[in-house]
Length: 534
Image 1 (tube, rainbow, N blue to C red):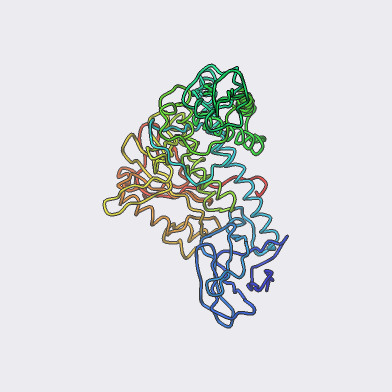
Image 2 (image 1 turned 30 degrees about the vertical axis):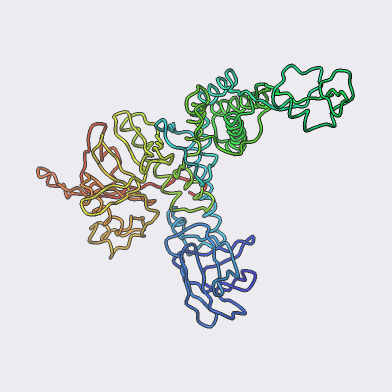
């Protein structure tokens, strides 16, 4: 099948369709880009991968290990001549929910894919909103603004967590607003003048147009008497138009804008109490905005980095700290936002597993909250997004761990105080169990072969690497399959039926509130239960 992509190129392949102007491809499938009217060297770029091989204006390619939206760029020399967004599908999703691929049309697979994306994104968003986040930072770090965009999910937690701090800071600023004494030279009627200084004298001398004949001989020119109608006077007054107040007004406008965006995007996902809290904050910020003090304050043109008022005065100091936290780069939320925008299934599944794992561990280890810690540079501390449980254990997201030879970064790692207990890795991969392939792994498969999904063996091998290199007690794959299995390091010598395997094992088989109950490696089914698909 050949699909016209518009412009000068087409894509050919067995599994391809164009629907509603969107081109759908499948991962692990061979395709060909056919480019017309080519004069020079041609190459294509798919995501970050560049392919330069060309045979008669035809370039073969394959998209591996990616499901979601991506772009195909076609270069003629170094010039981009065509750009097209495509969406990559996978047969994994139908398999996960027991669908027979041979009976499904591509349109049905597209519908399943879109339904899965919508459901998992909604579920993740609901968990992000409902889980108790805490965003904190040390005091007094240098301000470093990031170019990474803030998004509504981060803004929601910032506004919700810091509502009282924001209101208190602005109340203190408006109660004891910083002002400065300003002196300006102004022309004033002669009879209103109260002081005479050098500027007054110089003004009379240099601006004779204000002199009129008068019997009061203030000035004599060629024997004639003159008096000035206007003289220069220094006018002294206090103003709120200071750099510190311009900063406060600028940040206030940002907070109002983010309140509006949060209420618009997340209105149907927040519970009534949280929505009311954001709405009340929004109303208070609007009230502050209309205060007469800010009506005389202009736009922020230069950030007052060295201002002692910002660094030390109550209200301003608190607002500066809030600004630093708000502008700190939070890749946790930024990557989630990009995954949602790109429908990046593997990354979305990783986030889903983290939130699901936090909830499941919370049932075992006690109440929890999520911490996001900002380090002194104003950026998110590496590996410092974690859930802390009632018993003091912490589950870290994407923390780099130092092994005895190299550093490794499992998706999730759990610590008892400062000691690593175990690691989990989310893998949106699975194999359809094959009797011959898995007979050695499970003798039952030889006698009773079935189509239940298993974790990929390569990922189980990786768990052995994690456990060995990091000296963890356990390493477990989280995958969207139907079977769970744990392989114990030490068998129970007193139990003749103990073959080292724990079938259908669950987290509460692995650990309890006080310690780890099983040591070894395994795979655990973590599949979104989506009723719409099932």
